[in-house]
Amino acid sequence: MPYTYEKRWAGLGALCLAMSIITLDNTVLDVALPSISTDLKASMSELQWIVDIYILFFASILITIGALGDQFGRKRFLKIGIVLFVLASLGAGLSTSTLELIFFRSLSGVGAAFIMPSTLSIITHMFTDSDERMKAIGLWSMIFGLSQGLGPLIGGFILEYTSWHWVFFINLPIGLVAFLYASWILPESHNKSAKADILGMVLCVLFLFALTYGIIEAGVSSWSDSSVRISLIIGLIFCAFFILWERRCSHAMIPFELFEKRTFTIPSFAIALIVFGMVGSMFFFSQLFQTVEGYSALEAGLLLMPMTLGVAVGSKYAPDVVKMYGAPLSIGGGMIISALGMAIFVFTIDVHMPLWAILGGFLIQGLGMGFSMPPSTDSIMGSIPKEKAGVGSALNDTTIELSAAMSIAILGSYVNRIYLLHVKEIDVDFTLLKALKTSIQAAHTAIASLNDNALEGNLLHLVDQAFIEGVHHTMIFGCLISVMSGLLAIWLLPKNT
Image 1 (tube, rainbow, N blue to C red):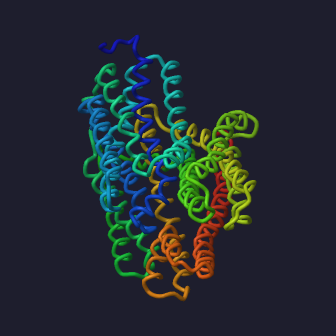
Image 2: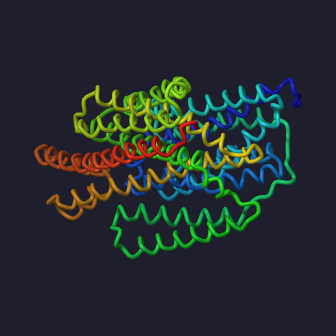
Image 3: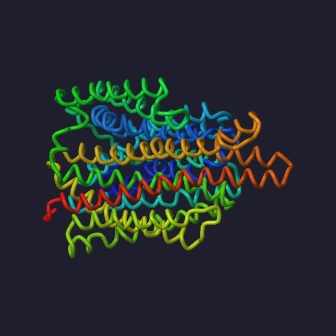
């Protein structure tokens, strides 16, 4: 059945299916991290790389790959992306070491960068009526949010009945159907005048990876370590080259002039902080629930669901809040509400954390996010000239992905550093201490093999408290930053935004 205009809604289904595998992938992975750590003996820094490598490749090449897709064929790039993603998922599921898994996760990120911009570009091409296009993008956004939100629950269900390998294998049948469906019904489209900023993309990849490596390694050793300092310096040098090039390039991947507008910069910063808090929470609490508190993967997935529910409810009522109180108060107030959710964790986090605090904290945190994100996105897109709407949308997606990557790198490094400082004080032999320092999962496995109930109980208490202490400090940090940023958003955003 070749594509005709009447088949545009069926074509939208193919695009949503293709997009769902890349949005589902990361949040499904969150609840699998403790199992991966135990099975592959992955350290905290390796867990950070397993998550971050995907996001970094995805975010750093997204805009340029989108321009190349416009030039050489959007449908072609979509299909290439699906094939890459499926093969990378197969490799990830078959991985027997963290190095293999990190490699295949990087390929998944490349595949995702081919898929994501192609979906929106094809939607714009298929839906020529503006009202229909808005409805189509609305449905696309709903599937995007739904697949992200259901990720922890689906991941928990998979781990309840199979192994962590299947959080990657699940992408194979979905990807196969999406490839056949897209090949069958989607039209090919081009924009021959599009130009890709290849040098900008290379510089972006280099500076992001150097900075991320330095930040993650600082959590293992220290900020004074020579390799950490060298990595950060290299990252900053490439960052400077990137900015200089982007300001001179006629087809730059990032139009820096947009950041001169408060209605673009402040909401972008707000969204970055919201995603920073959400991704960090899911990364740590999935490990806290399963390894420290003893919940199953499915139970951990269910405990994370109130955040998704809060985002959905907040997003639904955000337009009414904006009408009543204005966008600055909705954006800034939402960030402060989100901070209140984190404040509940600050005061209640423990080995036996009360259920009401878990559910209530995530619900309030999600509600604040929901109030902030729609008016932030609307302000961003409203401040961009129509002829640059595609670039602005891609830049918004890149901001979201990079803030997620930085959340894992910065907060993970912070938690790992505090955890290691506490564990180093435990008086045990060198072999056991090495296992305790690897990760909280490795610590539990090593302690369980001691066959000494009294010693086991004491050591478990010490390592659990070390991990909780790290997460507790990140919640304090996140809470304070969200409150201050929310107040700044209320103060600095124009009242008619």
